[in-house]
Length: 194
Image (cartoon, rainbow, N blue to C red; front, side, top):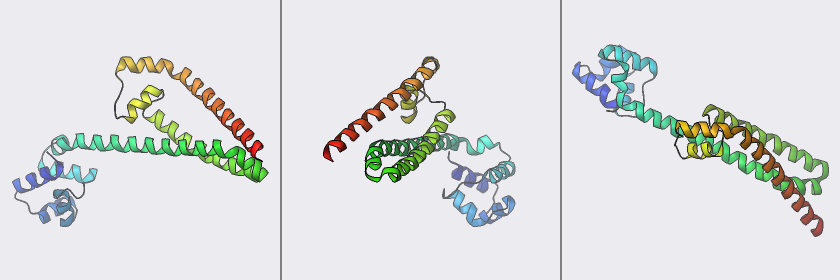
């Protein structure tokens, strides 16, 4: 059952109007109407008052909504992680590709712009790392599972935990090499063109 149905059911069982219920939980009648029509959700204080008034546990009151709330929270976490990851990836690519042309055409100003891009990129890299630590996903397999809305079982989790130090080093080294190669290629192409 959803909370809006529960509130309406218990209110009618107690023969209370929306106005009478509103007075008892210190909200407006419109707020009760919004709750019952699923337009808004009561805050924790109101939930506790409703639970006490209806003489039922909080679990009974929000039973069906717990799964819905968990799913919404999980979806919000996933969207935040993906958003930060996408922004970081785009900024990293822009920084890598633009550093040589900016330095060649704008000299020190180009290096300044590249530095600013790098700082903004590292800001979002930090955001991604905080999300990874918060959701305990570090290795590639864990990240892929998380972005697909799945979790690894205990055995897989322990296997991936052992890979964490190695994958971090390999990713860092790989990123540095790719950046170096891209910069060298861009420098050579621009040198030949100019």
